[in-house]
Image (cartoon, rainbow, N blue to C red; front, side):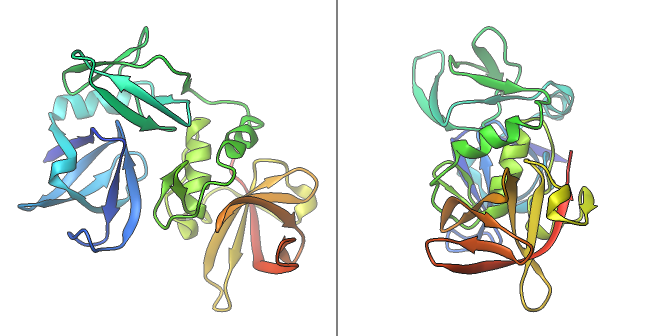
Length: 256
């Protein structure tokens, strides 16, 4: 079995081994994964954090040993807490990294990645944070443009948004909306929910296609065109800019 780690700010994870293929997610700096199949130019991988599978360009990651892969699985997860910041290596080369990048073996403003030492002096996030922190982290992404498969402050989709917000606070969600909808406990009414719970929405065929984070006073923050705040009622999401409901409510779930 082969293993790898992302050494760039963010890398596209695609359905097929081609730059023209659909991007289904992104691999952020410091994320590690299992290499399921290695081809000449592309590798099919399985991300350790959420088991998401897809193809990544071989030029955009480094292979790591099984020993390092195992250590990363047991190490305390530390994430970059700035919207955008940079790291430096031993020769003072700069590399920008986005919010949510993993900093392996972080201590005293330095971390180790595949035998190389890097310096990072920004804020870090680690461990399980109080549920109220979910809302603060969600607000960080306000006005981020919608990007299918994205999960950074420069482009994000609805389930990437909820996943990264929960991840920054120390909780694990699946990558896709329909998978997230299988997690947590069902709430019968909006009135039972509290800020940080998730609301899921379906289409005419009954397929769950959208998710957002519930706020106080019957509002929701979600990625639709951009990360925005709208009104949530028993019918779904009411968009005041469009003066209409844009999503039909299916279920509300408490994740933590």
